[in-house]
Length: 168
Figure: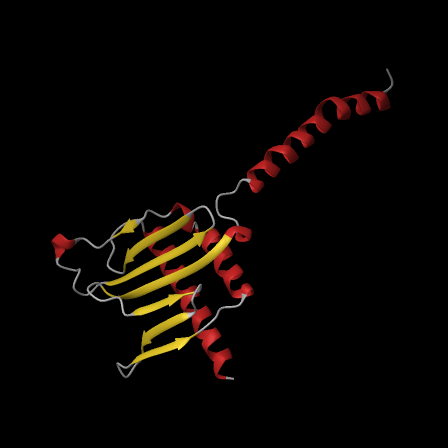
């Protein structure tokens, strides 16, 4: 057998089946991914002091209310674009939102719950949804806390950008 035919034989026996297997395996993983944007329904966030979550946004209805700097309740109808929602979906995936624990609550024994701000973030899809309750005084893995804060910051920034677009 010549050197060239050995390389062709090696490619046909080892490399080609490996590539076919990779395409099949990863194609099935992507196809069966639990949280796909094509199945995305809506996103909502609620936040505020633990006893009253007055700041709310729901992308399905477009209802948005928040307390401004003058302690006035502002209500408006605000729609995020598909690009905004896709960005938030991808940001949640990048930060590992799907792997966050459902409850990340502050320790009530230490009396820190009074100062805590509670965030309830929910992404809804056709077949599944993911809801995370996060307290700002939560004590846990610092990487998890940073990921939560980054996602909250991105959501608030998207809402602020959409509000500015509405005013123009």
